[in-house]
Length: 94
Image 1: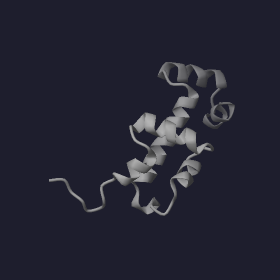
Image 2: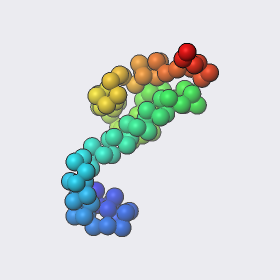
Image 3: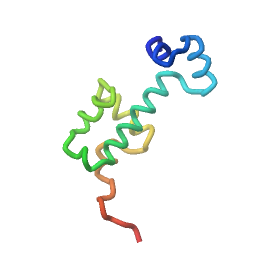
Image 4: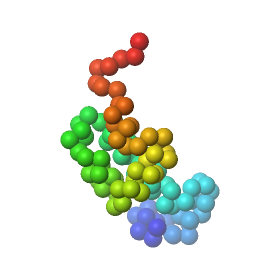
């Protein structure tokens, strides 16, 4: 958190107050942002050549099991199922 506060040019205590107001801990916010990035990568056909583990590591997760658990909790599916259920480019629902 110290590094984040310094990067933002604010004090660590002020960052703590901001996080408290948001109702989300710093760790929860970081994980949410990482998961959203992973989701975008899984939706992107350009990332199909990447293994799910590669995506987990690229988004800052060092523990693949933890990544899977958080992803499923947030999006309701495992990353593998989420990617498999992604609509193909050009598919339209009628």
